[in-house]
Length: 125
Image (cartoon, rainbow, N blue to C red; front, side, top):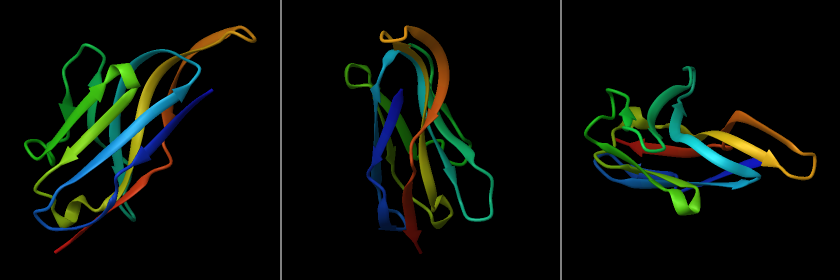
């Protein structure tokens, strides 16, 4: 019903910057929140940043002051500007969204959390 498509990962040297983008598409009625999580090898997936519709942003302590999350509500998109990258930021970054979907063909509506396929970010020292 809903798909999240990410882009923008890659390889960068420590201190550098990357910008991740994610766009939601499909049978979307309303987006409650969007955000980014990450998972490094051998570690659990962890929250990076979230931004609810009309609400305050939330950041992990480890990225506060270096990463900036933003949204383009008209395009159902979320972005993560990552500055001052460190090797410990290396991980697969996943886009996340809390969405109310509406399928007129059934009809059915509901609220679910969706995940993107992930994009690799590698920071070399």
